[in-house]
Amino acid sequence: MKIILRLFLAFLIFTTYSGCSNKISAESEIFIRVNQLGFLPDDLKTAVILSNTNLSGKIFSVIDKKNNMKIFSGRIGNNEGKYGDFNYTYVIDFSKVRNAGIYFIEVENQKSYEFKIGSGVYNQLAEYLLEFFKVQRCGYTNPKLHGVCHIADATSLIIGKNVVNQSVDVTGGWHDAGDYIKFLNTTAYSTYMLLFSYEFDPSKFSFDNNKNNVADILEEAKIGLDWMLRCHFKKDKLITQVQDLRDHEVGWRLPEDDSLQYDRPAFVGIGKNLIGIYTATMSLAYRIWKDVLNYPEFANKCLSSAKELYSIRNNVPNIDSSGTGMYLDNNYYGKLALGAVELYLSTGNKNYLNDSEVYADSAGSDFWWSWGNINSIVHYRLASIESKFQKYIFNNLIEFNKNKSNNLFGEGAELTWGTNVTLLGIALQNILWRRLTSSNNFDSLEIFQRDFILGRNPWGVSFIYKIGTNYTKHFHHQIAYIKGELPGGLAAGPATKSFLLKYNMPVSQKDVYKKFQTDAAIYRDDRMDFITNEPTITGNATAIFVFGNLKN
Image (cartoon, rainbow, N blue to C red):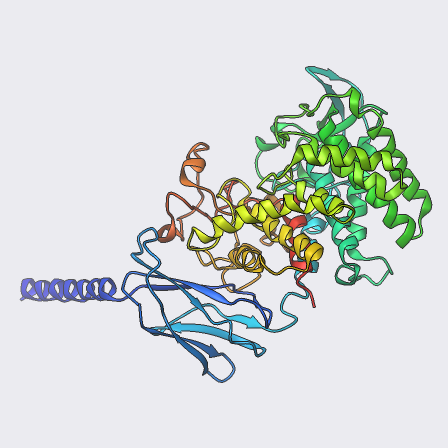
C-alpha cells in the first residue's frame, strides 16, 4: 500500500511539474521595452517588443492607468528580425498619445512598465542627478552619505618615476567613480559641463534648493574649481591624479575608513590636453563669477590661472602621461581649442580666437563623445562666431544617425566602456545643433539615446537609480554598496561580450538579465562589474546637461 501511495505521489508530482514546464514553454514570451520615465507631449513615442512568437498584425494598446481605459490602439508591423534568443522583434509607435497621464502598453495580455506623458516629466531630473556629486565629494566639503575624508591629500608627490617626500594641499574635489581616486582630467571636464549647462540656459539650471540665492549647479561646480586651483600648485606643473591603484586593492570601505587615507600620493604632470580643459573651465568660471555672482576676486583668480597655463602650452608635451595610465587623451586639439575660445570669450583678445580656429580645424569631427572627445563643444562655440564650424557637428550627427538606423534599439554608437556617456553625448550634440540651426532633423536620434538610458533597451532597465520601475540597484560603488543607496547614480551602461571578456570580472550574484544578453550587448546589474555598472562624475555631468535641457 505504501509503495502504491509513493508511486501515486511521484506520478502526481511529475505530472504537476511537467505540466507547469510544458505550460511555460508553450506560453508566448513577450517583453515590451519603453522609456520608464516618460515623454513630453510632442515627443516621438516608441517602444520595442521582444517575442518568441509572431505578433505581426496583432493589436497593441496604450492603457490609461487611472481608469484602465484603452486610449490608443494600433497594429504591430513587420518583424524587425532576430535579437539574441528572440526570433521576433517589433517597433511600435504611439506618438499620437499626447494627453498628460500615466500609461502602460499591453500586447496579448502582457504589460509594459508604466510611463508618464506630460510637459513637466523631466523637470526634476537634472536636480536629482546633481545629488550624485554630493556623494562623490571629498575632504571638508559637506559630503552626502559619508563623513569627512582624505584630509591629508596629498602625502607625497610622484614626479616621473621618483617619489618626493613633499605634501601638497589637494584636499576636496570629487572621487571620480566608485573608487576614491581623484583625476584632474575628469574633474575639469565635469566642472566645465556644470558651468556650461548653466551658461547654456540659466532658466533651466538656476534651481536653488537650499535657498541661498546661488544656483545649486554653480555651488557644486565651485567644489571642482577649488580643487583644480589647488592642483595648479606651480606655474608649469599640475597635480593630475591623487592616489594610485592601491586604492583598488584594500577592500570595500567608506572613504572616512580608508586605511590609505594618510598614504595618498599625488602625480605631477602637464600636457597640452590638460592645459586645454583646465583653461576652458577656468575661463568660463571667470565670466560666471564676475558677471552673475559678482565675486570679482575669485573670478580674477580663475582667469589668472587660465592665462598663466595657456601661456606655456608650446613648452609642454602634447599629452600628459603622468598618473596610472587612466584617462589618457588621444590628442589635444579639441581641448586646447576649447581653452583658447573660452579665453577669447572672457578677454576679447582675438589672438586666442585665431588659435582656437586653427586647433579646432585640426581637431575635426571626432564621431564620438566621452570625457576625452568633446570637439563638438568648441565647434559649437566657434560656430556662433563663424558658421563654417557647424559642419563638424553635422558630420558627427550624420554618422550617429546612420548607426541609429542600423540597430533595433537605435543606439548611435558602438557599445564599449562608458556607453551611456557616449549615448548621452550624442543627445547633447543634437541639442547644440538645434540651438545653432533651429533644425529638428536629428531629434529622433536624440530621443532614442535618451529612451535607451531610461528603459528602451534589451534589459528593460533604467540606468538611473530610482528613476522608472526597474532601475539599476547594485552599482559598482563602495558607498552605494555599504549604505544601500546612490541618489542620482547613473550606470556606465552595456558593452560587448568580447570587450568584457578581456577583464575576466567575477560576479556577486546570478545574472537576472541572462535571457537578454547577446555577444553584441551585455549589461549586468552587479556590484563587481566595473565596466557596465560603475557610475562616474563625467557620466552625471553629461546627463545633467541633456536632461536639464528637457525641462519646461
